[in-house]
Image 1 (cartoon, rainbow, N blue to C red):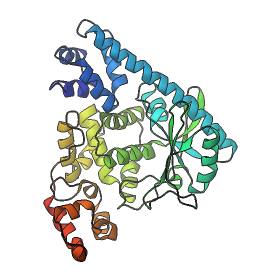
Image 2 (tube, rainbow, N blue to C red):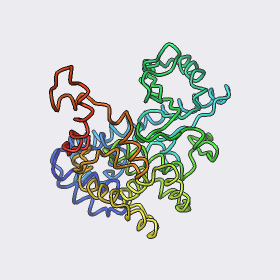
Image 3 (spheres, rainbow, N blue to C red):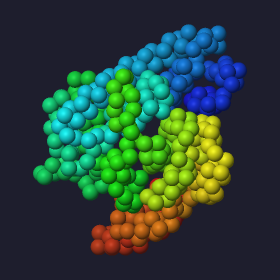
Image 4 (cartoon, helix red, strand yellow):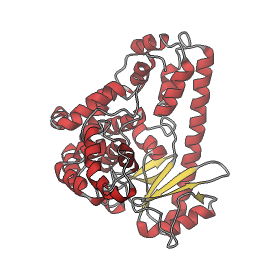
Length: 377
């Protein structure tokens, strides 16, 4: 990837980038195919194309054609997703199934104010666990195939699985049904419909009304999702920034209180600090000051601000694994002492080779390996 392209991508999501600054950065690009591929990975291709329009004098025609082609492909995908989402929600409602869409075209329509302005992605729906089998039957009738391995009782294989993954062979549409959102398997909270449905709102999608997360829940869900995946893609930072921009009356006091109550304060701090630093999100000074007082969140945000565009997925060095650093002190203590955290993994066995008879010693080797493994993973 060209050395200058990360700065160009960062300028794409920053709300205060001046046109002359963007033009100067674009004029330095020598390998546009790699820039466009990077924009596709980061989910900011629609925004990149919007910035490029009218700048044909500094953009090679073949690069502009490629960006336009990718933009149109994404727009078609967004339209198809929107139509399918409305159809699925209609069938669910007719069968008494409550469903909450999040991310994707629902977020694009509500926060970006344009369902084609965000990378399309998959369809994500949160439902009540008791509706899972009926919802699965409806999706199968619509041509979807269930790709998640299930047990004889119909539950997903694996104790940490809280989603069913569907794909429709005829058009490649992907839909995920979730009955619980999670930050990490070490944080056991019921981030499901009982958490988000009581205060949900309605939003407009292509002229139809659909259920939508209330602003505080949406902010926490986006911060939880981005934090869970290490903020590897610029689009997740942009999502938080766009939500903040679209909700000027957001109840920050309640957002901070709720984040503390459910153990997501550090995720909230990290997401908002990144949205402010990388995307220029306007955050009330007192809120920004309080979130910055979380030293771990501030340190990670500063590191990611410097690396996310060019080295996505890279985490700052540290003796404590990243997913544990996201937790508050109470949840961190529970996680470290949990049997699941202490159970040896393949990396522990690869760290030191022991005879089978000495396998129990890996319960002692694992903490040592985590301390020495500065990747935190």
